[in-house]
Image (tube, rainbow, N blue to C red; front, side, top):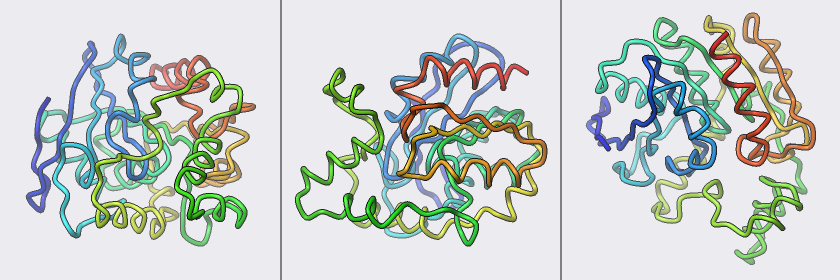
Length: 259
């Protein structure tokens, strides 16, 4: 367990595990801390030194009133690698973490060995938004019903029936309201279209084919924009494909990064 210092002085908690000479940074989704990766992280520990961290506003990182943007989160990743003394790393971001990874790979091409963009979006005019029906399901006043709707967007009914939780992908319960708003705004205002075209790292774009939370149609849009990117849709998977379908997703990611 370590603390890095961001450019603006914010303290960032990160944790390193695993073995190997190569480093893999795992970037969690919006309003989530490093526990987002608890289920799938062990799949990578035998091959890499894995790095997980708490986004500013979550977990044991500072929770400033301002300073939330996907490009700013990418600068936080750079600060963590600097603190570790790591020049180059593989980067795997999912959901909002994929938006952050887009900026990191574009802004620091010399520091990215391999890149995986999972269940994410280019944002802006080229991003494909979730439907009005999905938005309504998440905006219910009944908080229990809204949470259940989110779970059903993340996982299939069969998975939910067999896995009663706890779930690490439905938000950090300790986030203050201002930080939660900051994360929401960061995701909403993300526009990575120009950044995607600047990515030079070997890139895999992966998405659950049945994802309507962040619609799967975003995946081919991203893959068409990143030079020489590979695209893989996982049949039957929803937003948390990396957890429910880890037996498919993790080997896919490992093969790409080793390649």
